[in-house]
Image (cartoon, rainbow, N blue to C red; front, side, top):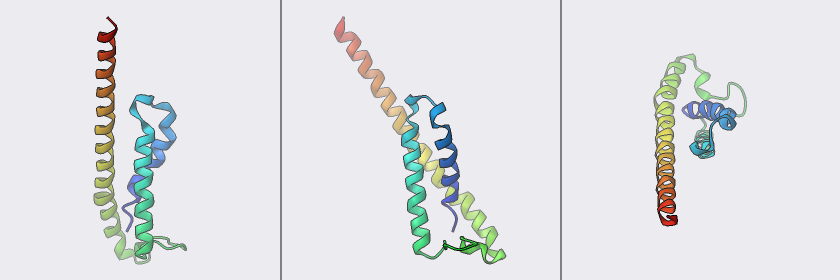
Length: 112
């Protein structure tokens, strides 16, 4: 229903902060992963009729009894997807930074 709102919120925040974070953290990777996930989920929810182009936009908001279910999905599924994206991004950044350090050491030893 609304699970894409969790990564969308984080994507908005990280996009706004991207210039304040050092390049070594590759924020463009995180933002691409977050926004890509948001777009894919929004399209999927739209095709299944869970999102409409008219208010209240989320079909779960039409019936107040469905709102707790929607919020639960937002917290559990949306939170899990956001955490998974952060985990993959963290692994990518750590791997690249380790490889760059190894390359720098090899270049230093070759020059001597």
